[in-house]
Length: 434
Image (cartoon, rainbow, N blue to C red; front, side, top):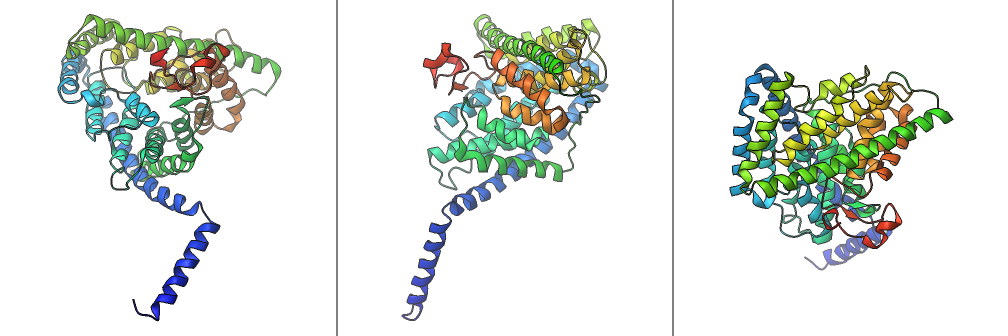
């Protein structure tokens, strides 16, 4: 650099430093916007491919029902894959949550293809599972590979994983606002990590835009009738929320208990999905219906249009618990949507609210109680069903959250702020410790 250039260089450096002092948040915003663009693009593309594959697998299975007889064989192959090659990623969503609390080694990239393959196989051969777990794990495994190139420290890796969860959730359901808040809420009950709020929202929105860019369509739900906001409808909503909270707690407890039974009775892990697959396949053929396997989207849509029997939510709960506890892959959330929507629709027999509204309330409220994410579920309800139902959705989610107690489908979720005094001394403990 020449003598004439040095003063100009010093002046430029001075003005740059002055600019960043005036706008101290700008480097943070630029850095995380760049990272969020990458996360959003990759997670959104992964979700788009996964959703298309899932739709194909579902349609093919429904056209070839005999494939369900092979569910035990498919389960054995999934069990072998994870037992011999995927033990370090078998924890799934709990591994992501655990790394947000205490980042350790970079999450192996193989988690993404393993869970994708396991979930598609589960649905192809007739298991009852969801899709959120797969989207979150794919996004988390892909995003964590950015930790080294961007030289992220432990605290920044926490933010990265939160952003990845937001991107995966927001893109797979088409609800970016709920996805962002879910990622901020899910790992620590009662507290939100605000230093991750920008990356979470940016990643979720960009991922949703990417999924839409690939022309992947999400399911649309509609509530026909929403009553005027008065005392009695509010009271009925509280009563419904109590039922949803009890259902959520029951599901969380049963899935953990059933999982422990499979582990204690069947020591060799690949044999567990064989037993689970036999139970599910025999039940499907004995009942003569595929109503309770797969995602169950047609039944969820049906719950918004007519009053359904109570057996629908109970049977879906049983099929899902057996499928996932035995070691098949997928998520719990879409089955929870099914369980909540059909329970809400059935409750219209006793609760004088429109069955469509009760189905929408149950759709998100059972999910809120089972994952302890009431704010995300309120937003999801508004994104999916419209703001007109917002107050009823909020009441159901809050009551369900409170009534579900300290139970969760995620064992590594920790208590940041207890729901009641009984657990005040347990701040920071995970559900696996309680």
